[in-house]
Length: 193
Image 1 (cartoon, rainbow, N blue to C red):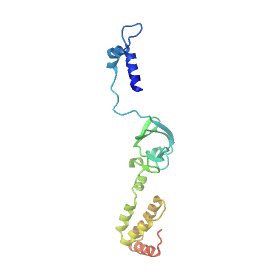
Image 2: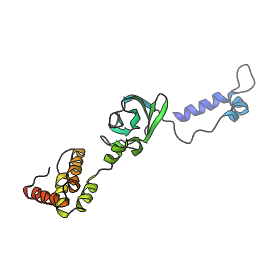
Image 3: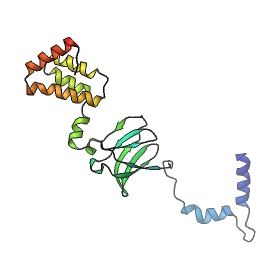
């Protein structure tokens, strides 16, 4: 069907106008072709937008994917425009782009640029199990085993990390010997808190 349409279109474009002695094809070749620009290298993508509020954790949620993207902390609580395509996500405030991310479709995950976070949040964002296990191993093998027990619980990771900071800070506050003794007792009693 497309082939038949193309033949009819070619015939239509080559037929002279009723009042003039030239065709649409001739007008295009003589005047219009040179005015055309080349097509862009990338396909056009429709951009979608949403109005959202920057949450207290310096992120906004793209509800289509249930994924979170960071925004500079000075915009916490402000209404921003989330503009996105299949490949990228931009955050605008009063017409100015304040954040740009590549789109990630993993639900309930965070895409974070560390510079968007205030300094105390940057420290927290670097928390991970390996950090605490290595810190504990530097004190003693018993403390390392105890911290691994704390991290194996099924609480929110942030809660576990705060517990680890509290436990490991006892080495400085009360001394390593007292912390090691307490960890041995906790391991023996299987109490990890």
